[in-house]
Image 1: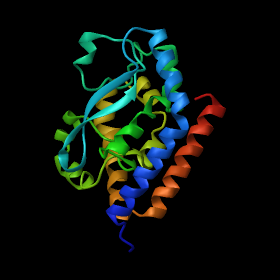
Image 2: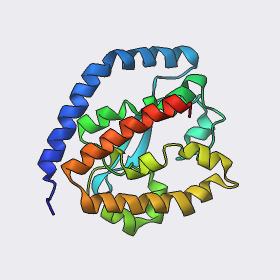
Image 3: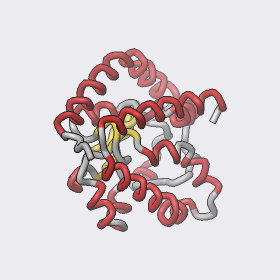
Image 4: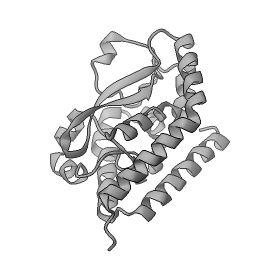
Amino acid sequence: MFRYNPHIKRTFDILLSFFALLFISPILVLLCILICLESRGGAFFFQRRIGKDFVPFRLIKFRSMRKDRAAQKKQFEPGDKRRVTRLGELMRNTKLDELPELFNVLFGDMSIVGPRPEVEKYVQIYPNQFGTILKIRPGLSDYASIKYRNEEGILAKAKDAEQCYLKEILPDKLRMAKKYVERMSFGTDVKIVARTIRTIFQNKQTGT
């Protein structure tokens, strides 16, 4: 099988993230202004995630929730939308809140395509599985991101959202992430990017 040269993948990441950021810069500025006007707090949300070779990094997202000092201490709030702003809900549904992660790609923390980065407490629960997956950089999108594009809705309906994520969703995500690592290629990345874009537009049309 053709081996995906890491230098080619990194070059693809740099070029795509740079030109994407350049192209969408007016949208980024507009969203920054709207976020700050809607609720107190900065435009960005930073969270510690685990990257390649288990090296932690700060994930950058647009802030979609109201500030809450007590909640900030938590690493993950599965299915909890109580603090989500109206603009935040729109950004989450359209994945606009993840646009700043292109900076993570440009800086070398992430790739355009790769398993989504997890918080440390879940990595510690499945260290062996993550040992295989974190041989590469985490990414903006992968098979699991497409399958679980409405993950928050699934978790909101669960009796115990965190246990649902921990026992059902995360193991499935790990299985798909391992599949990606084993079959990684330039062609696979292009297909995942195309499917991700198509999924986002489908969600817009259906209002999900």
